[in-house]
Amino acid sequence: KTKDGRIAPSVTPTPMEWSDIKTKIMASQEVKDKVAAFREGNKDAKRELPCVCFMGRCEKKRAANAMTPTNLVMIDIDHTNKDPREIFNEVWTFADSTMPEGWWTDNLIVAYVTPSGMGLRLVFVAQQECKTILDNINFITQALDLERFGDIDRSCKDFSRLSFLVIE
Image 1 (cartoon, rainbow, N blue to C red):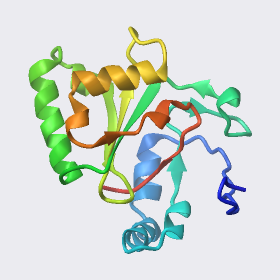
Image 2 (image 1 turned 60 degrees about the vertical axis):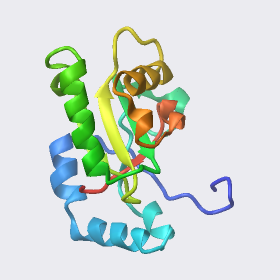
Image 3 (image 1 turned 180 degrees about the horizontal axis):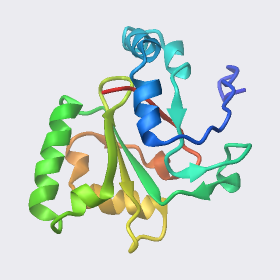
Image 4 (image 1 turned 135 degrees about the vertical axis):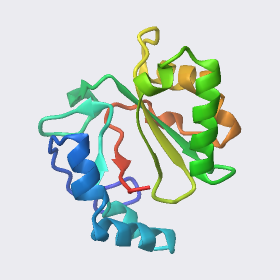
């Protein structure tokens, strides 16, 4: 059960390639319908969305102490102050002009709009100079000046943090 008493959905770890996730899961009409229902106010629809754990791998149980790190870091920008697609374009331009050449394309793995339509999720390769996931979140947030766009969800520091998938 979840903290608020609801029955948590069963999560069975299934290793997949990103290309399969994108084409077989995120692009499905069923996922699009659930995202639309969630955005129209059906909060239960979000729990039915497929999810992925970018920052850790698990065999049988999704718990931080049972996970192997993947060397990826997820940054979640919540309650954005503009369209997340515009934010992505601004961050790309900013990174291109301020970060070492190739940093953005070498380190950004995936970016997409969150199920609410009002957030942006960015997944990066962990930076060697950072010791923890939180150090990585803080480093990338500061380097790319991400807090100007919304709230940075620092609870993404947990290896077992799931990310709901949508196609945007």
